[in-house]
Image 1 (cartoon, rainbow, N blue to C red):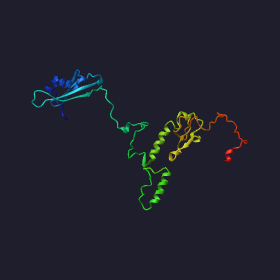
Image 2: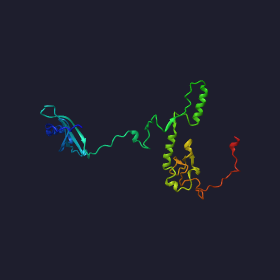
Image 3: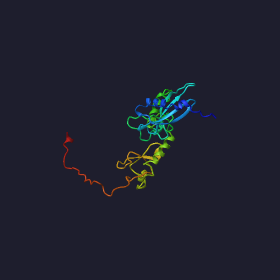
Image 4: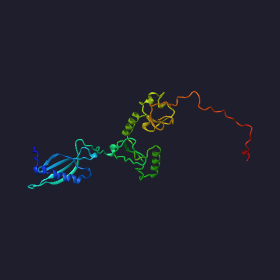
Length: 256
């Protein structure tokens, strides 16, 4: 086990040299009282001074002095401002992929998708064999593919569907919210409920009732709210008059 270096008498006593160097670098930040000496290595020490600037409470000026072998005076090696144990620090850097949250994407913002995103898998475009023997056949195939909603380079994977379903079920459009607990019936029996296509359609649809807070939102089949289509009023809101048929007048335009 290596022994700790002994403090060098010359560099440890050169407080004035360290203070002068700190003042030259500090500028308007200022330099406070001497806080102590840290032995870094043989004939190398760091003098610590308080930083009185109100924006850097707990920070310290660290002035490292070094003395060459057989030299009689210390020289300045480095001057930096470092945080102490009680210093206020900026939060650690977090990659953007970990910082982004649902709803952060705004108009004009581009959100790159990783090429190995587990939510996606290769799709079928019908163009992989366009240069093969019968191009006319593949033109027809691509048309059918487009009508079926395919024709995309990447489509939602089973993992992506499961992740979306789990998130939607836990959200406001799921079966466990307050609106569902007080609803007269579930969405699957509502006339305003339009099912999604594909595998997610077995569990989800979109609400089309403009008077509910769920209009244009994805809701589960076992979700519900007070705007169910089966809740019918006893009377219509507007009474319409009986239609009147004119059987006496003659439309002269018929004879032109």
